Length: 209
Picture (cartoon, rainbow, N blue to C red):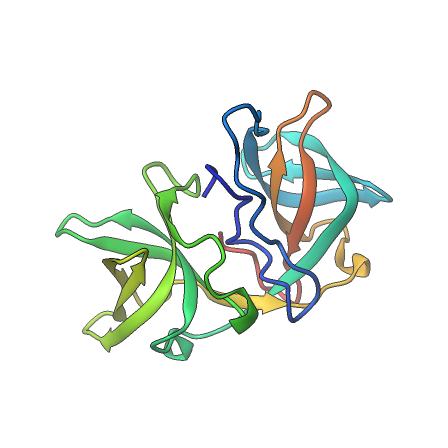
């Protein structure tokens, strides 16, 4: 996800607000900024500055780039996941083999294919993120197991009951209130994280990714 594009998991906004689209391919002579994910609660927001208390307990100042985009998440259900849907699933290897989901994001149709692939993720140690198309979803004793496909490969991921399942929803800057939970994919800069996109939780829904 970090090799050639901005994390397209976040902010599938094309049809709803604005889009986090794949960036241009990286050439050998290009120096791509290091990516960092900011997860935490808003302390203050003003203009192009967002102060966030991270889940690690630190307070960081995030600079919002010109033209930055904003969206929120809305609750969905595991039963909403259908064959043909494009999803982003954070998961961990399971003791019995395969992967177990930590969260699922159902992308809007306009974002199908964005960030396709499976890569390391930092939600938890050893977690991965898989952006892929659902081939099938089978109900099991504890939740569901989905088979997803990407770049000609397949992966089976179990989605236990209670796993957060969300989709993209609209948001406005009025939602950036103290205490609101955010997920921010940003670039590491000398002055601190530089963000082109912000995903904010509202109505009690927390961005799970």
